[in-house]
Length: 336
Image (tube, rainbow, N blue to C red; front, side, top):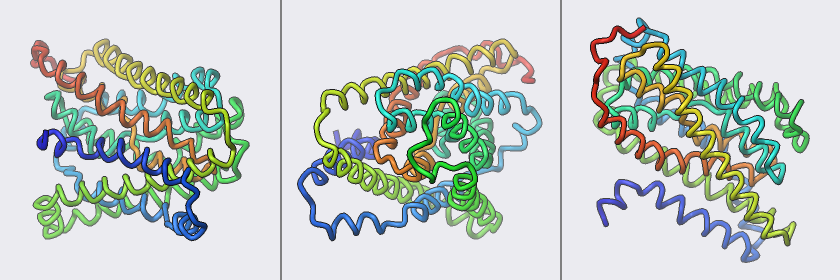
């Protein structure tokens, strides 16, 4: 049991802190506590997370993927185009603005930085592809995510609740809190001394980033609990909302995997590249999702991102283990 807790401590933390935050929010906390949570610099916290993740990314194997770009382009296309498109009809069945906005955020944020490579490696896929997908999608998130949010605001009525969802504001926020820290982390790795130190202490950097994520999740859930308590009533409807949006998250993730697998098969990619496309094409990153959701003024818009992230951990573990059992029957096939 201790070994299982050690491996899955982040999920245990989510399952513990979310109910705790909701309980504290409903326990009539003093005004000083509420103001203390409001003063937390969430954008700086997100920047710290992305810096810590970026500085641990080993980009030494990316040249191979750059020589054969189609698997990377396929996974990026699925992650940043196909998933948001598949999300649009699902917005119509959501029961509240929070869930509608949150689901679109979950669909439009980039590929997760650490988990994509970890799960690709677990599936014995080409982790160089997943690394490059991570860098490309995170590098473009300051444009892609605001574009999809603008689409939602224009045609699906998802962005009329907060001026912070404005395109230009979101571009600036993601550039400063996501793109710049990620680039800075990679620049630090150019120093041999820094690179060696980080590689020797990679678990510390990764665990610190995840602890900050848990802190942001706790704060956002606390704020959401306060808002829900002020509104009052409608708890059965709230449960229905959560069930529908969680179902939507699972459908999106599984559909992205199927599309990535089908396209990569039709294109004749090598088996290891197909596995990387399935994982990297469908995964979404939590830190940027938190940053964007907190910019909307809708605390519960974080819920779909949490659901998507938690679901992908379990689904991808199952998928990776089954992909690993597949024979490398096309190992000699030349990747495009």
